[in-house]
Length: 223
Image 1 (cartoon, rainbow, N blue to C red):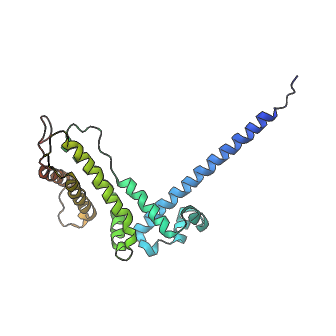
Image 2 (cartoon, rainbow, N blue to C red):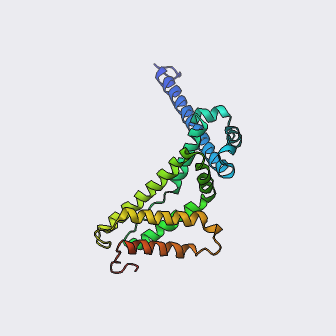
Image 3 (cartoon, helix red, strand yellow):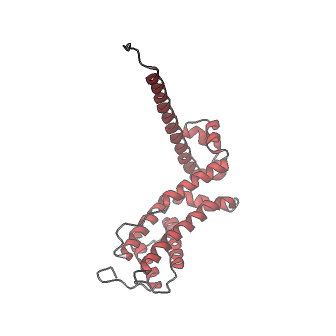
């Protein structure tokens, strides 16, 4: 007859369960700390530039010590690289699922992408200035622009297969022109004396790019 004491198996399982829960809490706390450090780094860099973005200030405003910061990232340069890479991921905008009307789908994407760029305008301006002295900081924005252009080119290639673009349409060039135009307007429009209304600018830019690619609207699509 068994006594009321738990068996050794259950005791061991209970210890494993407690250890597992403790590890999950530790990992969650580490992830939370890492995300906070990245967010703070982006904000400080946008405000103060490279020299003003000190590891001491980052650690203080993120509520961690510098040892924790270096344990996560190893160096200030690695931290900046990770922070800028995170911004790149946040800026990339997905295309809408409904692509029956390619022009409207492209306009919807362009408005979202333009808006995300505007939200990061101060950071991007600061980064452009810092790149003059530190070309290595260009890696993330250049990769980001390249990824976005490939993203758009892939969409346009898909549209071309439907027969509404010219057979010899240069989709890569079209993507380059569109992304470049949206980027330039988003970054500088608040300094322009009389900027065109955002929606009108985006629609006109998309229309011009598609016309250059020989776009012929299908029946029922927006002309």
